[in-house]
Length: 64
Image (tube, rainbow, N blue to C red; front, side, top):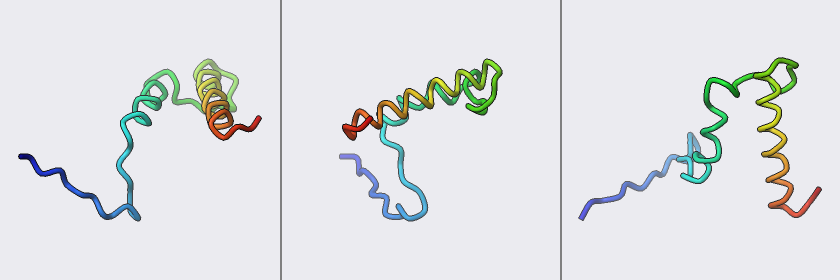
């Protein structure tokens, strides 16, 4: 039976949950790395992802 390690140094870093990684991966590529305040396409793409994330957090908290 394989042993699953227990990570106890969460003050330094925390493992990323798979669903968080899955949600973030599309925004870690070559086309969404820009400053979301910039007017160029890469910035606009980053802004769209930021706005989507804000809306998802607001929905989860039940706020506008």
